Image (cartoon, rainbow, N blue to C red):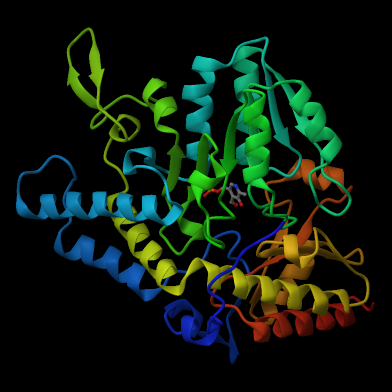
Length: 416
Ligand SMILES: Cc1ncc(COP(=O)(O)O)c(C=O)c1O
């Protein structure tokens, strides 16, 4: 992957850390070394305060009230939508739909666009490195429509297999579902190039950008994918909130996902006229505080600069991979740092990752252990699980050193 990073001023992780209350705490004299941002990121004070302020001072439903605090809530809710639109450079805020999480975003595409457009003669393609949330909806869609599933496998070093990509193109699939960044291998996929190639054969492309939007500059216009999903809680925002960014013509043509309040223009006993975009897809009272919090999270990241975030993490992941490679019996997964996002997976001899994570926890080092909701990928590498350290803006080399030191302790405990 070739990357152009323009703003290369180093990011001061220690200064960033001061903005995160949870990172100020110590347990048994050890500071919290949080290396699980791939699962969920920590939240800066600004986001926590925005949630607090909403509930304390202008808690009201949106789009309904004609009184001051409801208008304020509606205004901030819609302002956040514009912030998110600008953050990923979507064409219009009407293309930004708030959902419950990226899982809901991907399911929405399957249940609405999918049911309306996919039939038994069609082929759906996804890759072996997808999170379950970008696998199971397509299996369900295949079950509902009879469409055939085809897969792009991964190479030993964690890239998409080019021969499978070629073969998939020949099938002229109806849909390609692909992750921008693997949450296990860390692989950064060439989304812009994949979209262009699959568009040429008439394929609709859905991108799971859950591990990309928090960590690097993402320009959805440049990607040109048809649907892009991401999730607020991995990008400093609150839980229970996701985004589906869709191409306007497709969203206009799609039937709604859920029916109810807010998504309607007018309702009669026997028929309903739906609301316009984006509200057509936002049935019921939304996650108002969450959306406002996400707006603040986006401000925070924008102020840091996503170029700098990416540069910081690339440097840190390179250092982590170099240090981890020195630990005897440790097997690293995924591509080299230049093509690697913020997550680094490994195994250590035959220690079960859960046992390893438990020992690291005693050193106050938080890592993820398990299949990471990517069981097909575990099968591909013939392993049950990995340990995953995932990095973010508040991590630095000290955190890597703490991880490596804890791994050495674990080796001693297991008498390696
Ligand atoms: C690549 C990827 N896709 C999807 C998800 C699911 O995110 P959520 O649980 O917020 O829907 C995750 C979270 O672990 C992820 O890493």
